Image (cartoon, rainbow, N blue to C red; front, side):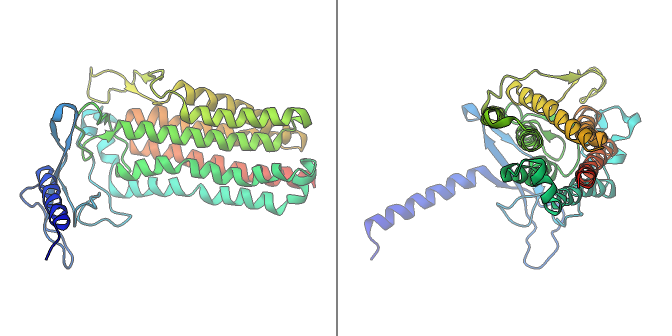
Length: 353
């Protein structure tokens, strides 16, 4: 015999399933799903907003709930969703829709991963020339560790943005905020996800730049604790600062929702994230220039400058014109910056040996 407690638990489970069924509605199946054991399912999810209102989300054909995903009934890494309809509202003369095809998107995805190679080589260069760097750092091993790890931290900082791109199908497109209105991810990108990804990207990049600065510059016995504290404080402030204190930057040359719709917002960053990043970048550039110049490699400054150029092109141009080729070119420039960083480490160590 079932105990009263078991009966109560079973009844609560039934009520929970009933509540779930009210929020997951099966609709007419679309394309047939291929593969053994896969049913033809098309789910429409609904989300509750304040006041109890229900906002229908995009229909996505998936093999099984709750593992919803894009691009749909086949999701190999090279499969991409079709161009988002919102791209057609942007100036058609630039070719936003035509550039959002599968093979350009696969190339764009590839160049987001390739910086890992030169950045790992940069770390390997530090390890290979550790005797030179230890001598340069006054035998302070913690500075060697900072320089060794910084390229990997730089790459790790971009993983938040990569996650956002995977979620969006690797298409840069006009975005809407799901906290304010219904957003069909098959038509628009997610503005709130973009803000979160930018916050993570700039915070971790700030940490990576500060690690390089602490390694390359000698602040002295008394100045080092202050410099380390300031660097750590900048990263913490970048992450925990008030995210509503944004400058609301926008560019007038792009009309993401059609002619007359207004300028495209860019860099959804808080002052608390943006200011530490900019200041850290300036000091980082000075560190590259000082150490590079001291060892016959003044062009080492080009590495952080080219990194910044690629990131600026993506944030200012690609994500306001919404042209996929511009997105790819921007990250090719980031790849060049990574190669220059590796070459600078090699050149400085070779000249100083």
